[in-house]
Image (cartoon, rainbow, N blue to C red; front, side, top):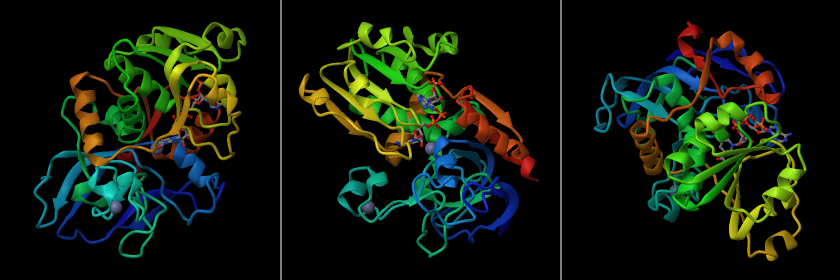
Length: 346
Ligand code: NAP
Ligand code: ZN
Ligand code: ZN
């Protein structure tokens, strides 16, 4: 099946309208008519080659919401007409320890990423900036009716990437959490941490988005451009969640942790980050990373967001504004996720 899509033809090139071929619907597959696809900063890192060479052309997009149009004969989990979502991965081995533990994203054979990765049939996966996609039913999530579909799309990456560490590192009542960066991931982290009962502080480059941060559920909001912020908040937080897409001075942020606190990095900048081990030793602090989340946890997150009426704040755009949206994301000028209306792909 040949479908319309927006693709980057080469590194650092603007995306253009093109077509991609989707495989025949196999016995375990679901054909999804895509309605919305979020623009994650990871799409931009990929297209720009920040994480190394990528196969081109690439159709980005791993925050996909749509409607099931066809199911393979063995599929019982989803039915034609269901509202569904696809996140950052579309397959894994299912047999390794990590897959069995529900951590398919850490599959020892390598999970199959939704785009720019080798699929099981030897083709290269192509993502959600497209009208349709065919995905193994086990990697297709159910999107609860309660959430607006455009607001739900970013949950498939930004939602799970923040929900997973917030749950793992115990965001909840009596815990103080700082979220660094109020972008796509950050604005979901604030909402989710608040819904889990934690006391949330936003650390943003400026106070420009303070009103939004407080409305989303933060109790405190500080500008990192003000050096006084780091003196005032030193030794305060149980968890600092860094969502920043660029290098930050880790030592300064580690200084914000209480004894036994953890700084979890989900931001994935191109360049290495340095830290001074004394920043960890003096306070028994930890520095950790976390990548998206497993399929069962992603479904739990979607259900949690529906129950708590959480979703992304989105700016819905037609496909011909994708390149402009990329520029605005790079300039931290996004409130708080661009979502492509894929019906504009024709
Ligand atoms: P985003 O919407 O662009 O948000 C990033 C935020 O970081 C910006 O809004 C800005 O917030 C802050 N920021 C940007 N440049 C900065 C700089 N030079 N110094 C300080 N702060 C800066 O991006 P996103 O989609 O949320 O993604 C964030 C990062 O997470 C990306 O690196 C992405 O690849 C990564 N990611 C990782 C995973 C994972 O599984 N670990 C999953 C998805 C995304 P303020 O304006 O508030 O300062
Ligand atoms: Zn993403
Ligand atoms: Zn595996």
